[in-house]
Image 1 (spheres, helix red, strand yellow):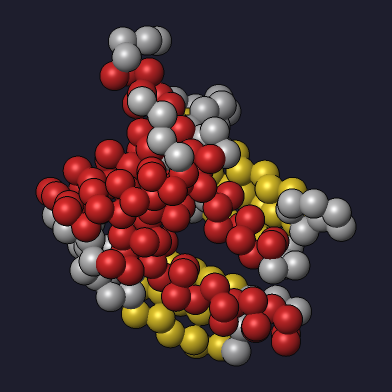
Image 2 (spheres, rainbow, N blue to C red):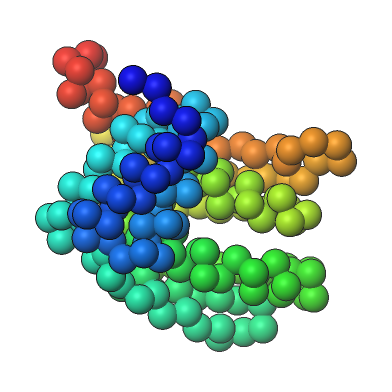
Length: 194
């Protein structure tokens, strides 16, 4: 079955609402998911969307969380997602981040207590579309050992950076800190692949 992006957007929004997300969270999650799918990143697109729905239904994501945004310094924004989606806190802050970066030459967004964000390049790309160079990184549980070690010390966490381009869309780099992302490893295990 093939869907247009508009059809997929409507279905995802309705599914997120049905799983327990409020309207703001459903829209934020849907926009990120559809953008990833449109870029061909299905592991953090529609197939990953199912993980969000299951987490919402199980209560691992608070679909009604109201992120607390604070500004401890003029160019620094902190978001406590309060157990909700990472997307909502960023969406609430992006306009202020852009204004601060234009005024001070830099702005910083940091978030805690959020569920996984999916495609990290979605966020850096949005900042680059506003004419800003951006960098983002995430944290996660220790899954990988460093070179010469067997003890896990870091995760497959993505890192992303983006830059506006003179002509055309921004350059967006979104990569895992390992040979592949955790969602790819999990998918291979589910499919019985090594």
